[in-house]
Image (cartoon, rainbow, N blue to C red; front, side):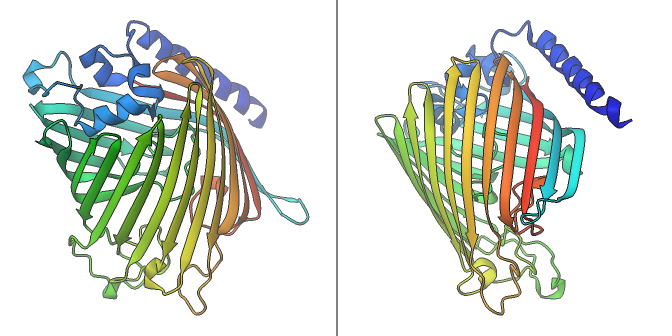
Length: 403
């Protein structure tokens, strides 16, 4: 059985890849509903699917409208504003003892990582929407909504000020868990799901947002003491400035959500975050730098964590081959007597990645990830405050598609 597993995996993924290419052969324009509606190529909005370029960021922040367009009613659209996005992969991962180098565990499997159904566009002039439903199949997740929001644009004309409400993402558009090139997630806390109200906009090189959101509390070990009422007690604000195609950003978050799951969950206490990021863009690539500081994690005074991120992306073959290399450091301070974070979640993560675009909306991926340290578990890779580990590696090949 073991001897035939890898060949059968390769055959299965090859069949899926060929089928996807044939299905997309009649669609000269690619990712997904926006291309069909506006007649755009993927490269008009993406540096490489799913990574957004400057035009793509502005398109999203306008509420999915092109410049000088107000948007349409649903019955005026050329096609249904619905897209299907999926990831399929074969991976091999193992963990070694950092001292003896002995193999402690290993896993090898083929899996559907995620399936996503997305509807987005406008429902009326200057009223945009996004509804995104997904299932993380490999992790045994259920099918549910990740985002569902509406945006009322041009409170101040030209998208200087917009109002967005619903379940959305708090993130910088150029550094996002949802739009990363690598299959490997960021360890750094770059993206948060939030539910609430946000004011956003852009003007003369400035892009900005500020939101008031619910504390997404969950039942924990101390369930009787947890107040699960959703109240607008969290808030955040971020801003970026673009100069000579380079972007610098800063963000502040104050929440009681304990979204990084310190254990046990403590209700009624804050966790704060301040981060600064830099996106250096060049003709054939870009460099991302990030610093993220969390403090008072779980409401524990002095409980802090720092994340450092360096990532380089190179467009080796125009619109065909992208190379991505990323290095991350996580350093969590140990607060004496704290019930949270009993281990020091410290370590480093290195990822090397290649994406080859068979068509604009289908890419074949090869990737290597290595983690060293404690509190970073690579078997489900990159989950902060997870099981302590020494040295772990993962190799994978996969397919990422969007229709």
